[in-house]
Structure formats: C-alpha cells, structure tokens
Amino acid sequence: MSRFVSTTQPKAVVLLSGGMDSLVTTAMAHAAGFELAAMHVNYGQRTWQKELESFRSICSHYNIEQRLEVNADFLAQIGGSSLTDFSMPVGGADLQGSSIPTSYVPFRNAGFLSMAVSWSEVIGASKIFIGAVEEDSSGYPDCRKVFYDAFNTVIVLGTKPETDIAILTPLIEMQKSEIVRKGIELQVPFELSWSCYKSEGKACGLCDSCARRLRAFEMMGITDPIDYEARPLYIQQKSAEHSRHTSSIHPSINTLQS
Image: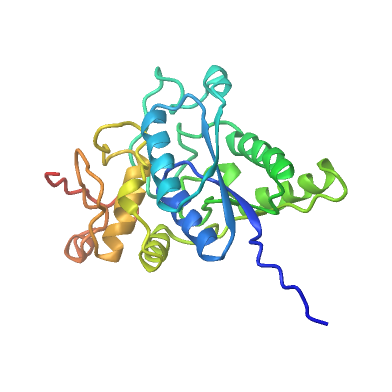
C-alpha cells in the first residue's frame, strides 16, 4: 500500500513590528519552512506610519499574504511611555542599560501575545514567533525569557483543550551584533526595516534603539543601509579606551556627518 505524504507546511504567526529584530525573526521562521501569517500592531506610537510601511514591505518581500493589522491605540490612551505620550521626551542612548527607559510601554507585549494567540487559534497556527531580545536589550521586563515561558503556560490554561500553540523566541539570548550576523546569513533586506523611536523621515541615530542598532552594525564592520540624521560611533576605540582612568566612565561618542 502506498503511503500519502502530506506536504502541507506548518503555519506560524509572526509578530512583525517592522524593526530589525522582527525582520530577522521573520526570516528565520521563513527559512524553517513555516507558512507565515504576519500580525502588526499600531498602538499610537510616534513612528507608527513608518513601522506600518516597513511591515507591509517585509511581508511583500517574503510573500506573506495572510496579514493582520490591529489597532491598539488604547495603549496610547493609557500612556506611561515616551513612545506614545508626546509630552515625554524620548531618552537618548543608554547602552549600559542602567535603568528601564521611558520608551517601555507598560505590559505591551502581553497584549500583543494575547491577540496573536487569539488569531493563531482561529487560523490554525501552531507557533507564534516574536523577536524579543533579553541579552542585549533596553531592559524591558516583558522581553525576558521567563516572561515567555510563563506565557506559554497561560496559553495552555486559556485555550481549548485541543489547541497546541507555542511562543518561540529565537533571538532571546542573542546579542544585537549576532542578530545582524544572522540577518546577513539569511540575506535579509535590512533596508526595509525601521528601528528609530523618534523619527519617520531619517532615523535619528541618537535614541536607544538607533544606538543599539548602529553599534551592532559597527561591530560587524558593515554599514547600516537605512538613512540617519546622525551616525555616531558607539564602539569605544582602543586608543580612547587606554586613556580612560576608570571603567565607570561612559564611552565617548564621536558624531559623524550622515
């Protein structure tokens, strides 16, 4: 008797903000052979139009036809973050991660995951990919591995018995430079992504998100292909390092013309 071998791809939802981390996560899920459905959330953030543009461009690049664009601007009404409250200034680079930055949107990722689980249950997706990074991030509490492990338990307790959905965080233990390296390996279109917290024309180059992205590309010895208003050097040069008298002084930043 001949056996029928199913060629159906397993389906996965990818949370795609349009940023570098979600881009590389999308590429990894695509390379793993999943049929992708992409979800994007507009939550009243400063750069929502640019992020939505990036989301759509990345989806087109990877031929993702099943897309969900969700309006969650209630997070802007709740406030408490410089990304959604324009009266709060967006903080500059804090590469030492000395405190949770003003850009933290309170419990945002829990809301995103809840929506992704709901959609996954409806469309039959068994995996949810999210580009959370713990090792080299801004210190957001909802970007920790323990948070996602706990949320996987919540999924088991809060969905139908026959539901089998798991959250995957392939970047969670990576450094930003490793994420860039992985993206190069997968030939991702970095030029389509957007990471800046402040600007929608040219990236500012000075906010914490821009700083971490620029430093990662600098560590890899390549140029970030997106346009910046300023391109500071975020890696301390050896000559400058030797001139330091204590290790507690922050690295100097040499600003270049963009």
